[in-house]
Length: 42
Image 1 (cartoon, rainbow, N blue to C red):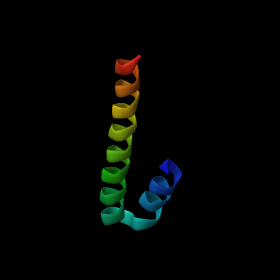
Image 2 (tube, rainbow, N blue to C red):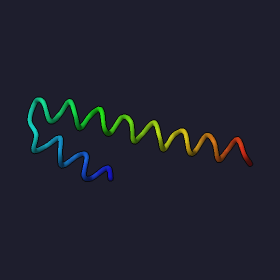
Image 3 (cartoon, one colour):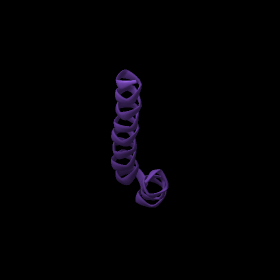
């Protein structure tokens, strides 16, 4: 998933970089939310 977003950033150029960066940010936030949720449950 992260590799796919990184590849999109590299190929897309300026506009692609913005889209890829936003997508990567959403993925990171989602993973962070899962980690925090798991830690909260335990």
